Length: 391
Image (tube, rainbow, N blue to C red; front, side):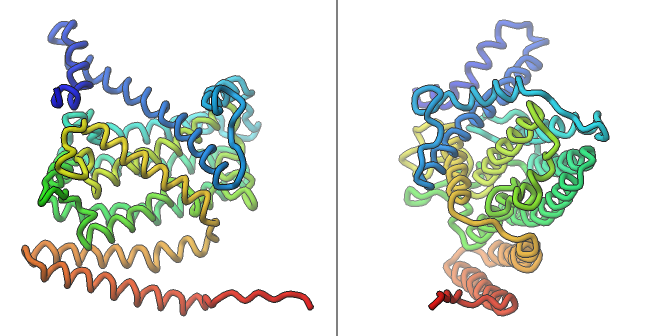
């Protein structure tokens, strides 16, 4: 019964394709999996939008959507219909083909990343030996889509927003990739399935997730920071700074094409949260050995939605950074610390088993972090704020 629940979707797919000739079963299985992904994550997008608007409403002491459907649950459907029926306005001077292709390229590139994410035991569309490399190759295409949108609009604000977005995404993508390299060094594989399997072990009921090691915790924090910047989420939502850029690289977009950018941003958030769970949180593995009877796909999507909740929480809590603060933080703090973490990971790998490596690796990371933080505060001349009031 437990195995049946865990492999329910795999067995359902095999049962459906079993009605077809043997020569078509492989193609039909892949097609069925693709359709499931294409339908599932937009549905999660609608749910996440409702949760975000409701959550931010609670944080800001207001109601959020509450008119369409019970508790406003049908608000995403109403917004989708509105986007489909709104007029599609394209500037006369815009490069129309590129203007049309930009949101399509963005959404397609994000969907391609889901192909290599193991969403449960035996639940991966393409089990590639270089799945992590494929994921980052697809992720790099999103920068091209953003620049296409800004450049083709023939609008100075759109182009400025696109350039800021590309600079930000490239800067933090370096950190994102290097923080993932630490996992590859320990697991010895670029296959996301093998990375999950390497963490699917237990000692005294506790999992061998990489986040529970000094280098894994540091790598996860750097990954989370870079992921927030990569997805243009607050406090790193500089490309969409309405106060100085109107709406950023999609200023000249309306109707369904604008909705595609919105969809792409949330899908990227799901994708990068899923990858972070796979690399550092054991993917579909259970948090305790006595909970392994729970279907693996439930654990994967639980971790994914927990990450999404943290994204929403940060948006309602943290103020937006300045552009110079954003870039300085990437190149002067996050990137050097990530490079240090790679050296600590190598030290952890070759010191062997024992408590000594826990002490040495933890000490190196803590001491360097404190020194770098102190130096950064001194250089930025950050002091306690003083409030002065009129007499």
